[in-house]
Image 1 (cartoon, rainbow, N blue to C red):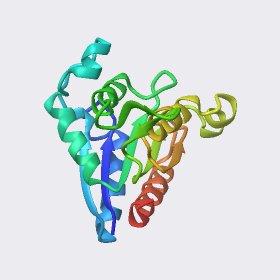
Image 2 (cartoon, rainbow, N blue to C red):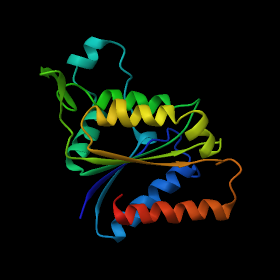
Image 3 (spheres, rainbow, N blue to C red):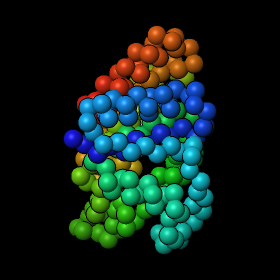
Length: 194
């Protein structure tokens, strides 16, 4: 069985947000299949943004980020869910990742040959993104640029060995039956810890 961290990356605490429903569905599916689950909701966290390279490299992360680091260390699989805002993840989620994925925790700045030491190499991830535009437009016209950046430039950079993604488009105009179908799909992903 897997140890799963679900990072619900929607900054709005309103329980009606679809990302929150998807996070619950993934967690319920995973727990029903016997996986251990820990959920962190971005909307519940309080932390400052980083403002300097010196702080990023040398300052102690705030308590909220340290708790997230502990949860990531514990997890074998990390699920990150967020809405696409202005073509990327919400700024608060990016700020949290900057606080969490620091030198000494996520990677070592010491060079070994020509590559950095990746410290989170035994983990897998799933990224689930919701958006107003059609998913096909995001993947093909915009080339899923922000999702690919998260996968390659952040998660793989710190060593995640596999990163899978799910893109859910047309959220604003989606019917209730289509939303329920997505909830069922994400529930199954949770059962499979995938």
